Every structure is written in structure tokens, then in C-alpha cells.
Length: 472
Image (tube, rainbow, N blue to C red):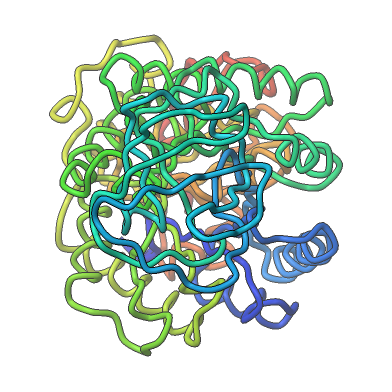
């Protein structure tokens, strides 16, 4: 086939090294399909400016690009310490929401006394210092016993793997950030530390109340979320899943992460939802111009497992080699997809043959048997294209929609190239002719496409037709 492009997409986190129009355009040119604003650090002023730059670059490059607002959630941290504090096994610490650092009394940025129970583990400094809750001596403080030697520093993360937040995972900061986000051009919002499907439903009600059509990505990074029934319910309730491997490794154990990653990608394919693999994919490239062999293998495995998107965090937000990192990741994706196939959906998970999924499966099977050049999906919301992508065809999915938002969201969907065109009975065919004329399919004299559409163009949920057309 003459069209060669990466089917697994790249999501890059914005930060100081790429805080300019030129950098954002360069990243998009190098292979970035979406940008992430990490609201643990992003300011409203920076985010507002960067959104404008992204849309400007997208228009110049004629390339739909997704923008994701990543909420901080109850990411609990120590407060400011007067100095680094060495601790040893057996030490007792008081973590107090209402105190400043004084000896073994440490400030925290969240009132743990309202949530934790005696006997629960609490991991300080992102898991480096492990403690157990001994008592809750006041309404703002808890006493913990240190279980290993280490050193504590200001503002380092705290993990509570066995603590139930009871659905209270949206902080006042998150609610302020949501109010900002719904007035801006975001395509996705990701919810941190999800514990159940109710967390997704609560956020969706808030977004609907603001009149927002942004899609929700659930970040899987808690022990509660990876229970089998809970995980599947979260996938069904959300529009996509981010495998947040950093906090998940601390909360559930590093050995759990590869299995959970594979399970999540399979469930996302089953329900036609977006899957994003995140955290430390090319971490060494923060400081080095080349990835390690282990990192190359990590990205390749995500591609082979069928992830829609692989994400860069510190590599682009704080790294010295953001462009080199994107280029290296793209090389790995391209080589892997051309030399290893993603297993068919029915081999990785049991699927229910809903009408839309049956049509999507038939379209992929027909397209591959006839060796067409592309599948063209006429789609309003993007659901048809996402369902086709769930079957991970080894050829492009050209999506045509009248909604700019849908085209931008599909920028992170597997194998999708999306285009905004008016609704019409021949929207897919006309786009395919246009692409052939513009050289999208190389210099082929004849181009064959499988067009998936509905008899009523623009009507949501009406996909029911597959047509094969030869364009000369």
C-alpha cells in the first residue's frame, strides 16, 4: 500500500521547553497528534495561549490535533519542609493539614484525617518511604510509623492505595480548572485517581451542566480501579482510558502494571474507547538524545498490544530533547507496525455483536480481503470511526465528519486520518476522490476504498452501509 503513516498516535505534554508557537508547530510536524495540559503545573494564562498556538499550527498543517486537559485530582503532597528530613524504620511522624514543619510534624496539602483509617498504608515521596497509620489524634492530623529508611523532601507526592475517597475525588482546584476548561477549546478532559464509574458519571454531569461536549478520559492509577468488574464499568462509562503507570505502580505494585495495561487496551477495543499508555515511555530522553533499548521495547509492546496512543510526559514538558524524542517514538511505531500485527479483537477479548460493531468488523474484513487502499468512515460523532479502529486494520481509516470537535478527537484514534467536510450522501466518496487527486494515495492510477456510512447523512447512530468504490 502506498500510504505510510503511523497508526498508533503520539500525545505530548506541554511545558517550558516547548512553550512557543514554533515549538508546537515543530512537534506537530515531527509526529505529535495531540497535546496535554497537565493542570498540576499549567497556568491559565499559558494554557490559553498554547491552545491558540495549537489551533494555528493545526490549521497551517491541515492536520486535526487533539488537546487534553489533565485534571490534578486528589494528588496529595507534603507541604514545605524547612529542610530535607532523614527518617528511619520505627520513626513516628505526624502528618498535619493545619501545621507547619516542626521536628517530626510535617505539613500536608490535604486533610488525611477525614479519609484514612488506622492500619492503612501511606507511601511518602512517591513510594520511596512507606508508613502505616497508627492513630488519628485530631481532626486535621494522623500519626504514622515509618517502615523503611529514607529521606523526605518538600512537596513530594503521597499515595494511599487502600484509602477509599468515597467518590470525593474532584478537589476545589479541579472544579475551578473545569470552569476554565469548558470555556476553552479542549477536546478531552482526564480525571485523575478514578476509583469507580460513579466518578466518571459525576464529572459528566458537571460538564453537561456547563454545556460542554468534551470527552472524558479516566486515568487508571488506583488499586480500587483495577478490580475486574470495576475496571470494565469505568471503561464503559468513560470515553477513553489513560494507563497512568507511575502512580499505579506505587499504589498496586510495579509488577501489576504490564498486565493491567494489556487488559485495559483490550477492554477499550471491546467498547470502542480510546486507550492511552502513559508515563516514562522514553524517560531517559529527558537528558539524553537517544532512548534506551528497554524504552524502545516498551513503546513497541504498546503498539503490538494495540494502544491507540502513546504519551510523552517529562520528555517534552521538561526534557532537553523534545523533538528528538518524538522522532524516535515515531520511528519505533512505524517499524513495529510494519513488522508485527495487532491480534484480532475476537482473540483478545469476548465481544458482543452489536449492530454497529458487526458493521465495523465486516468493513475491516472486507477491506482486508479486497486489499483496498483505505476505509472511509462517514461519521458525525466519531463513534463509527472509533468502532472500526477497534479492529485495528492494517490500513488507513479516513474519517469524514461535519464536526471539527469530532475530527480533533479522532486525531488520537488508531489509524485515523480525519477531515472536516459538510454532511452529504457522497461525502466519503468525494473526499476519497479529492485525496487521490492530492496524492494522498501516492501515484496509483486506481484507488479502491471501502466506504462505511448511513442512509441518512449526519444522523447519529445510523451507520448501516458498506460500499466498495474504485476511483480512477
